[in-house]
Image (cartoon, rainbow, N blue to C red; front, top):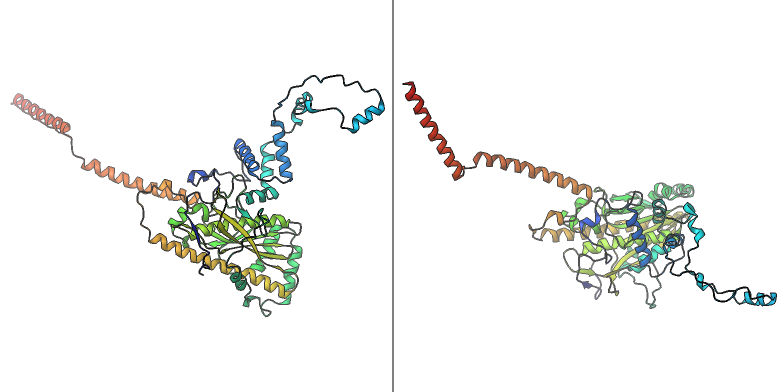
Length: 489
């Protein structure tokens, strides 16, 4: 598919594209000790990360996590003022009418008490407000709130129908009509003869009995997505990707499609690892560009939208990097990523696409756009339409993913190998495969080294001094032999 005329804009790519200013793409920045939500962490480092997260927000929303952060910071505030003796006598009001009038006007001036640490608070001991690793871990694990969305916006990731401060219209992908036409195609597998009224009733029953997110994704969503032969993974932590913004949690989509790692040239995988290889599990699909987030009846629609925005940004960034491999960063105005949400019988489909950013602090902005929505439990016909749309978008996403893989492989094959590159400076595909590769290489080098050492020992010539000493020893041996012989005679 060729981009529309005038829609192609190029910008010189750099290693730090799409990374926060304080981040680095070096392999050391994403070591095997990378902090996980469910594991232990460096307490001091996590405190600094929390402060960075809140300090970077352009707007702080009144949420539970924001109040927790305020409680954490309050004990650390220094007492900047010292107690001073108030001027005058406070016991000068005798008339009750004057006292009431004094109270109506605000009472005494308490300015001298601002910032004063009350002595009695020091005696509270363990009852004073404190923060520990458990409290902080809990706050980090519930980051999908309004402030999480705000930090995405501050870094150029915009939700659907975002209201820009300059009143400009939301950015739409140039190929939106083409996508809508594609997802509207009927699917033979969902025809009335193959998906009957009885099948629809079974789907409605399963949906009604799915009370939690995991049950929705295991017993309801498979009926919607079908059984296409597309590599996918479920509930997988994206722990290998470069952070989109500092201080936010790693994404963990409920479902995503990608490509098998062996489809992509290993040089491309290595160079773009922290953009296109989401998981440290080397068998997980790479280059994700279709996502699904599910919620139970009590789940939050707002949370699902924030998750699908985050998913879409990471997918669009991966496709942009692959599309621009070994050349200038290219923005063609098209979307190649589809995200979706399923909540209480309602399916929504979105696209995410990148554009050049007008903000000098970053190169790229990302935009979420709704495609269609379907009430799947309404009728068999609406279910067929919605399920067909989702299955068609999975096929469509795979076609573009495979197309960009072929193009990147061609570029890699035609690029001369730079033998001066140090293997340690290259980003590994994953930590596990990197370790295995190092072990195998080390074993080969060790074996070759032993062989070379053995040959050198057997073939090494004697030095001049050693040859002289050897000749002298032989002469002494011959003289000693003649002397012994003459005595015997």
